[in-house]
Image (cartoon, rainbow, N blue to C red; front, side, top):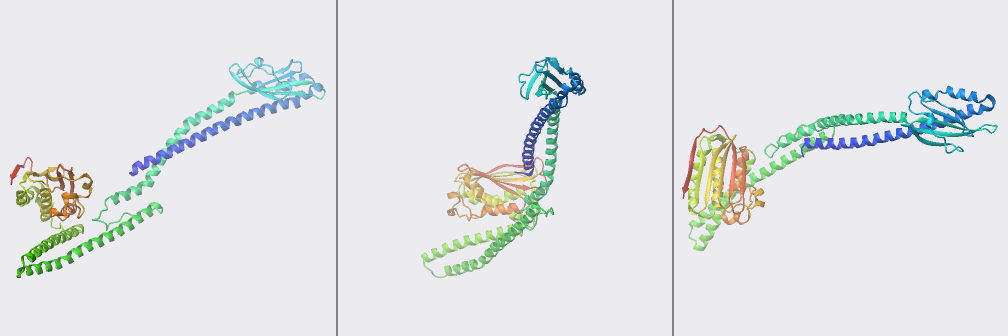
Length: 479
């Protein structure tokens, strides 16, 4: 997963979590405010009716009903949008407030309270307005009984809640959008050093383990990560150098005793020995030659891995080198009656060590001939494709099993019987091809299916563009 995808996923998780949190918070605020306003309205009506009873109606005997009516009118319920009604015990109305200024309800249409004995609340719809009404029974000291009712419409609560809902509806998406933009920017800034480290890490290979990743002086986990990666690369560098030195030293040290063994065996064969002994000496010499070849190949691979080879690069015509190298392998094809086909463009130049380039071509052709059945064919082509010179060697031989393809360039790897030791191969030919291509910055690929042949493709950086419309026609060599 790349950092861009990581940023998007982390931002999406952050935005989703923030959205859910804001929705829960907004719902809590809305419901909490609704409950608070409703509770406040209940308390306000209860206090109002109780105050009217204890301060005004309580004086009705001493100061008269006109006093109660006048003082209650001073509360200005019409202006405040409130409803007040004082009813005598016989049901007659002592005082009833007028219609409020906003005309939200008509007090005369409010029905009488069903419960006149205890304080209670009721909701009533008058016209288009819903009212909360509190009934408060009050008895004076001389035993006169009254019912005091105070009411208020829910419209004010609804107005406040509607305003809050609009704020939340428009504010929440804006907050989420700003949070997403800010979160993505912060995430990008936070992951920028990771991108920087990843870009440099992609360029690190076994050829440049001496390089180090840039140190990020952030004082956090990213700095610790870069330092840990550098320490790991340092350990890998030491290990690779140790392995490379070991392989080179072992290969170099084995050459001398093998030369001595060969010399001793040849001297022994020159003496008067029996036929059976001579056969044994010949077999040992053959194995000695094979072992010497393996040692030379290992030494070559070690030097290529260490960057000590391919130093003398020149501008080389890939097509001409391919043709001349293929001519040297006609005898191998002749032994199996294999047809060699060439499709080679001229003017395809590459920067390469010519000796190593010949070795690549020879190894690929030798490999194709070795694993192609008698009377088969091997085709070699050279062409220019974009900025690369393409060398392809194709055959109709035994092919390579799918599970063996990822390992075909590994040292000493043989794919089942087709790569068995009986074929005479050491299992290092394709490893050398891979090492030479890597040292030249070339890319080698293989396409194969078991029983259908194989195609090895080498993409070599070109030194110049090919000569336009210049090509050697297909040549078929019946060997």
